Image 1 (tube, rainbow, N blue to C red):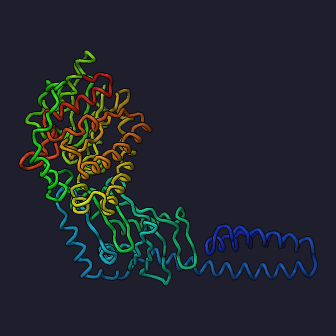
Image 2 (image 1 turned 135 degrees about the horizontal axis):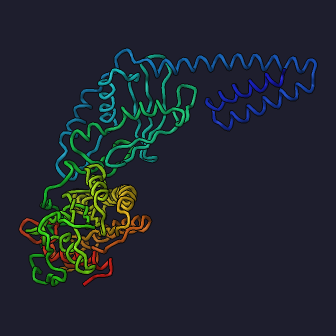
Image 3 (image 1 turned 45 degrees about the vertical axis):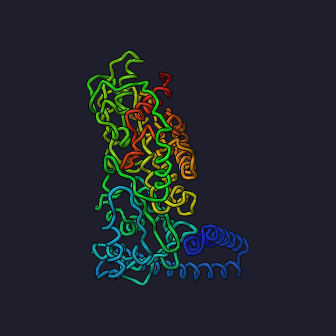
Length: 504
């Protein structure tokens, strides 16, 4: 009988200790109780009665305590009646002003801890079905997460925990750790309902999506949540570069050496398709940003996609169809959220493909190189931090994009075209040109690494344009523009052909 009582006590008290302290302590206590019960059973007489009484009293006390805590937790998570605390009006107004002030194209927004709390608190107040009365945050740069305390409308218990804040699939994602309800720690796997509840009120996706914003990277400091991304789903067709010291230096170089760089002769030539689609099977399917769309040239036939489509058809002796889905301003994050990748999957389900090409990454990185953080000094800590965040988010996004594309493409060859550096003019390497090339090379190294992992061919769009962009892009136009001219698009088309063994 004492052994049975010890077994029950071990399960109940060990389980409570695991929740209140740690699982290891719970297992230790359970084992000790069970061994004590076995020893008492063998001893018999007074020791057995004494130990049995102690076990029974401990079981009753522990069970009562556990029941009270369980009722407190149940009351907290199920009681939604009553008002939530109002958001701090000044902090909320400041946060909304920052969100409303997001410009088109690349953006960087910094929300202070009070502003972030105000946005969250406003969301709580807007949903009467939530049992939470308020959430208090503590942003922690050292661990890149946020510690939080949730106070409920009912009961006296509070939930505490941490949430890692990340950029995933163009939005904000929370990865919650274990949750503590008062004296009890609830493992994340057992706190699924609470995790989804807290996730619903602590992300910024609704506010950002309502403004057409796609998140590329997130940085957490002790005082700020810094979000970078793209607003509007795409950038203008031919964005003019903003003025900063980097561009001023390039203009100064150009003024004295504009004739030093000559465009390479066209080796591929214009394509036959002067549009974005052509009948025929199998198809050449193109995805990407403004380069795939053909920005920088007067007609689609001069863009690299049409040039490649015609040349690869000639090389293979096949009249391929063409589907060009390129969208100006696309980033690796917006590729997942704008619908382009989904449209590509649908197109591949309808028509077989021979080749699938993708260019993406320039808008992830180059917008940062034109920012105030990088404009004066590409080696500044703020600029390097921007680049590091971009590389991390680029890798994460490609790790989603390329497997989906590879799976949908079937037997087709998938080719990823790497990014060129528009600041590599060829007018004498300045510090800015050298450093910007280093950053672009780092981006391309990430692309090559992820592509190799997923069976995707890499076409080198970087090397053949190095030191040529004074003549192969519109960088020296009266209104400088990073996009390639006809000569530049020809070089990119040949880069794709070279990767497939048909270079000219």
